[in-house]
Length: 192
Image 1 (spheres, helix red, strand yellow):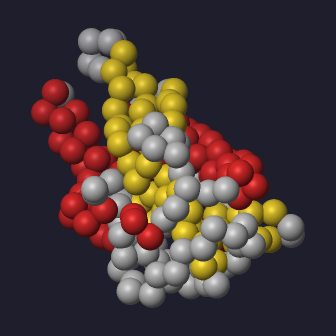
Image 2 (image 1 turned 45 degrees about the vertical axis):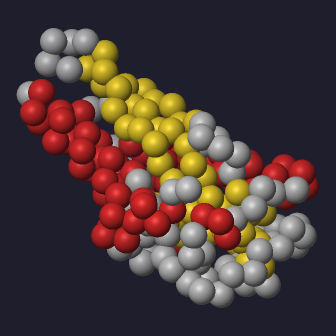
């Protein structure tokens, strides 16, 4: 069982460390006029700390997404996640970490998690890339889920993650319409 837990933890860590596609057009801006993005960053240096207005505007959406992600992992059911973020069902590319929520939820189910915590700014404050193309939010945090091992002892699984949330306005509020997690194969490209 310990070997199975180790293999599972390794697989989950591969998925949780997600992917940022590469694009050479990078024009960060500090204004808080946020639109729908059409490109992705070349590195995390393309992201800047948001001004206060942008931070306050975006944080509720980040928390909402992470809440429904955690709820899905614990329940094993993505229904509420899809209800609140229907666009995340489309364009899944597990290898690149694009919209991989369903894969992440399924991978955790062998552990039967029953509680969890996500700390979105565990490693650093979230950053944004704002350009004429729109808004991307880089979240570098910690995600841990509680489960019981074969001896009924409490264990946790998860770890560090980097994820880019793509946001657009819908009915006058911010909505996550795409996610892009940095995969282990891409992690070196996005580390200082």
